[in-house]
Length: 126
Length: 126
Image (cartoon, rainbow over the protein chains, first blue to last red):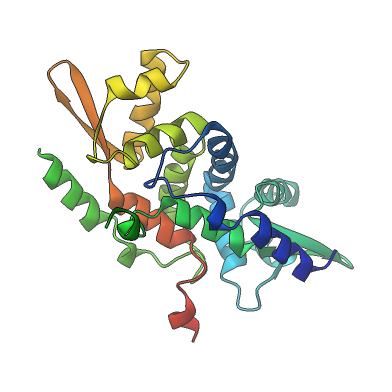
């Protein structure tokens, strides 16, 4: 599956349209379970640094070989953190030859951002 | 300390101005430690439901006595989750007579929202 297809799927499945922000209405149990899994993936300093290293890369994707030198951690540990970010739908990856390349899934990040903001509810509450 | 003072302090300390989003630049270790603590507090379905119950309350604050009936959990367990949300700077509270009243700190939520969004960087990257 190509990178483009994955990004499009992410946008379909995870658009903000499905989920009002936390200021608009209490989240139900299913939404809370799903969203808390994503936030839990962000609740670790190494994963947060990895995610922002990937998200801020000009070309949009990063070789794992460019991520590991920034950390005083083993390659398997870094790979484990990347796997958790991937399982949370925050990033995706593709192997090319020796290395694995990572990119963020912006739809997931924007969905979480929209969920947390308190400033977009002005319309709803006039 | 009054509610108003707490909100203002939160806005001063935690404005998005200090912290570019994760798309703008890699977060440093200190930022990652601080932000990941907040995301970790969000990484639990009960806490996420509590937070959104508080955030979506019309009057802006909720008595703990209105929160507990929604959960099949003991009062001490609910109080523990509320304490973690409070320690993360996401909510604050005040005791009035028998009950404790909770409200969200919008500056923290908006800071996390701004950190995650991938759509506000158009200016920076033209």
